[in-house]
Length: 249
Ligand code: NAP
Image (tube, rainbow, N blue to C red; front, side, top):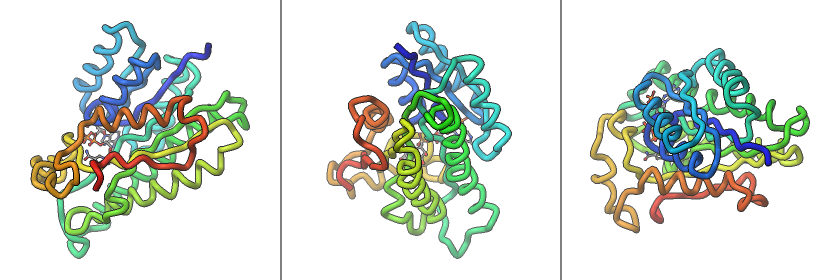
């Protein structure tokens, strides 16, 4: 049987870390990408190795094409032929209105969330597509409920980046459907991770959770479970589709 080999971008913390752990438990060899928090990435990798799995932690900035190319070359060399990608790394910036935004801020968000994800998909397709001699595979992109809700007065730039992820998911899914690759996305709602602190409001999930029909925030594992289903053969006829993991919001 072909070994399952996965890259999880932003796998050091939050949803990415949970996904890396779930993937390892399902037999994937895992590349945990991170940008700066080496301690967190090593801890996820060490945990997987101690449990008997295969994992490496690789620093690469999703805002850098050179870094992304090196990330995938490292996986080729150290783990083997890629079979899955989770485009999870994503950033948002402090909560402000559009009339206060600078071009620098907007471009930072777009290059990391959109260009980075597209370039990772490019590298994955070059390896997995039957058109390129690969054996097929699966890609899951991290969108957000912000793509539907728009992020008003918080981060419309981030919401727009996730709208781009939605269009990219639909388009790439059609482009590679005949080449053995499925492309899907998950739209998390309010999930307890560090991302809200990076937006300047660590307690954001608790402030907003009563607007969620389930009246609670979600966990990284709950998102990771949806990602794992989309990656798996159980989702063999699903491509270009979305799972909202958002408590009904
Ligand atoms: P998080 O807790 O803030 O973790 C972010 C992860 O991405 C970390 O592993 C971080 O690495 C990595 N990262 C950040 N910038 C990077 C870059 N330039 N290059 C490579 N890696 C980078 O985030 P999260 O909440 O788990 O979010 C994961 C994904 O889910 C994102 O795409 C986010 O937009 C989406 N999402 C989250 C929520 C939510 O409520 N949490 C809701 C909807 C969608 P370091 O550890 O090295 O910093």
